[in-house]
Image (cartoon, rainbow, N blue to C red; front, side, top):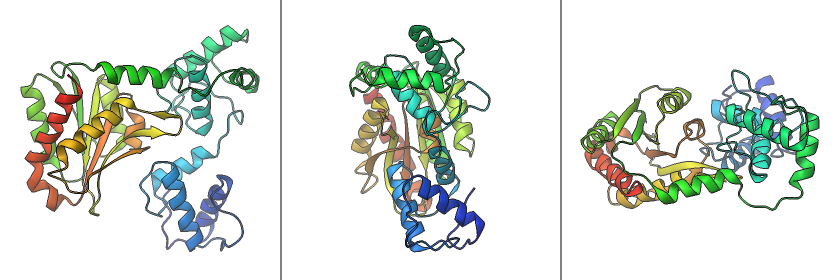
Length: 316
């Protein structure tokens, strides 16, 4: 649910309640039902902490993230269902299981098949009923045992770092390439270079991030590269990062792209973020935000060449 600054009434009151519950908006100094300056600042703070683009506007992604922040582990049973359950409670469950040595995959706040399997394995090891459902009884045992563990990154981060360290040849790899906005020339040129080098190209042409992610996951992509235009003169390479998990492979590729692109795209930065496409993809992924298309499209071939060289160096 997108809520614009000019909106008033119940939708803004709902937004303010969500921000308050998440700890970002005290009651004092807030005009209920009005998109006031304090409400906008609270949204900016929330977006900054959650790795979302900081706009001060509650777009669909910000609202969804706020709704997910509502849940704490133990508030509801967590189980495998369709669509997958999502929320901060799922992310906390994944963090605890990962630190205990149970493989939940990436810590993304999505309760999928790996999370259900890890819950069953934990229940078996803890002498609980084995049903793959994380109820209050399972949470109680999880919390008790988690106090006996250290503060290490957990098995998910260790495995991701190992994959990033070893690398794989680009030839024969499945590379998913997608775009948001009018930068199709970059995607076409990059696809040609990848095919010429023996990579298997997976084109994800959907407008929605969830659909692009689903396509990349379905075809077993080894890496995802997304390119988007922006109305603002903002240039960044984003990789998946949340407080409890950071994609080592995505971070390494992002820095390589920045190194190869810095002479083509000025003021390019690298940033760990929680963008929807980075969350949905199960493989190392990066998204390049390259500014207005009318300025970047003429540089399409140079941008594609730089991304290709970065991929080549990333997968020795």
